[in-house]
Length: 234
Image: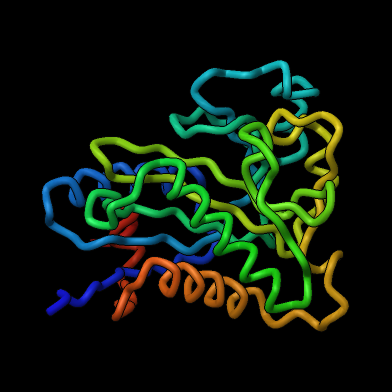
């Protein structure tokens, strides 16, 4: 008899990047020790640019001081992938799961994340595809990128995850070479669909549902007291 799979889901709203990073680090540690089940954080960020561990600064097209002037932050991170923008109207899932329990390797895991965003796009009549090669990881509508992936794996426990563009301000992408790919465009669900979009909170819930279905979870447990987890309460 198969053991039921539970998934903790933290619906967090708008969260500062460093707060979310600190929380991920704690959850990864707890997951390694078996203190918690697989857990995902569903959230959005204020305008934020992240550079991955290789520090590909040449793909940042403006001085960091200019980013601060426009109200955006820049952070270096340990995930894979290249420079990325996160901001309002973008659905982000940070995923703290055990690949060992799923019998997955890194490549298959990333492919599953691509499939999840492809499924979400299809709910709105948008035909999306995974990138054709390793340099185009993520999800595309033609030659326009709609979903990005950047993951870290430590002792077979994942962190970071995926970002799906609902309707972000695409002007922020003009200040970087998104994901290090110079000749491609950024797009969004609102731009590509002919359908009226549901509320962003609902779309984020749909993304969570696509994830849970793809990875075979039986029960989703909603996490509360998020302010306490972020160190903002007692």
